[in-house]
Image 1 (cartoon, one colour):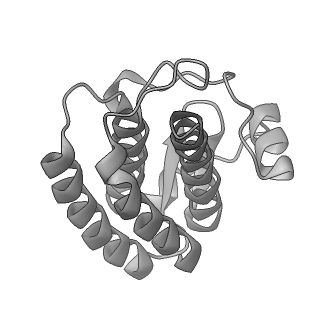
Image 2 (spheres, rainbow, N blue to C red; image 1 turned 180 degrees about the vertical axis):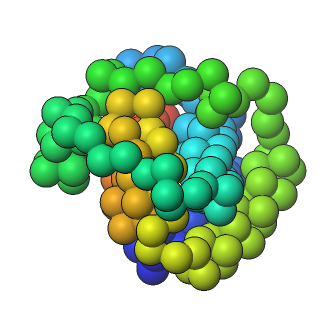
Length: 154
């Protein structure tokens, strides 16, 4: 949790670069990666809050094994579900969205360890695995943001 909270501080410091785009790094700009990360955090937390632990089903998933084993998402390999693909955002909405996500993070800390969410590639993830996914996913997008900003400062 602390690592994700630290990433939220990092996100906040980069919102001012929301319009920056470097197509050599990503087809999406900094704001898209920030908004997407916040949508994923919010969505996972909400899904976990609503989950019924009795319906959890473990399944063997090679993509989960690879990503969790490497602690990294390979770039350009995944496709975001439509519900977490940002359409409209600006600096003000990103800042407001960040406040909401920080509040939801407080909710996450109170959830039972049996709560879960269903990932489209990784299957059902209980709280501990969900936290690991959120950390890996947010780090992945923040690394892209960092590369966009570096490329823009050359």
